[in-house]
Length: 220
Ligand SMILES: [Zn+2]
View 1 (cartoon, helix red, strand yellow):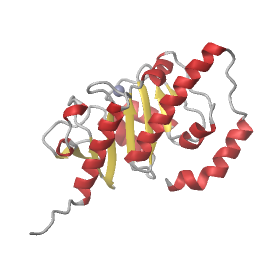
View 2: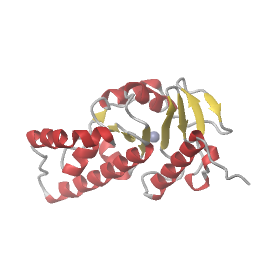
View 3: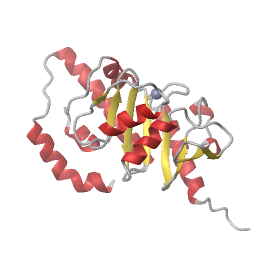
View 4: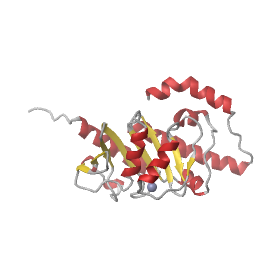
């Protein structure tokens, strides 16, 4: 009896499903909020389905789409934010995964119209600097994707005004890790604001941290 060896597509479906469940378990989203994707090939992407609770999600539910957002394989409709994911992949050929969350502290700052300053070296390494705030664009549109993608040209995370957070990475696991680091940084920023003046890292130090870790950031 030969052992079943899943192909690349099925392996990536499992990884996207696992990252989506982990995103939910880490309380970065509730019930069906947010979405997760990975690049399978130049013009093939795997993305979480629309409106399916993460607790019920199985690898077979992850939808295969093309660069226009049309479904190529899968029985469920793909995430309504597929255009945003695709616009980002177009702008960042170096990335392999995207995680979009509504994590509470990061989203609270996005609702308040605030960016997350460069406060912690760990966050600077993950994001590549501060976490900027992209101006509001309507969910589900190409316009949202294009707006967000502009800000992701030089960062691995961005806040979307009145919406939430997007994090990107070399793969879906790295994108999730950055989303977690950003939410933790947003929480610390929030707490520090209660204490008094928040000290942002010196821009020269931010530059030095990025330069020191650049090979590592690029390799991830
Ligand atoms: Zn959203």
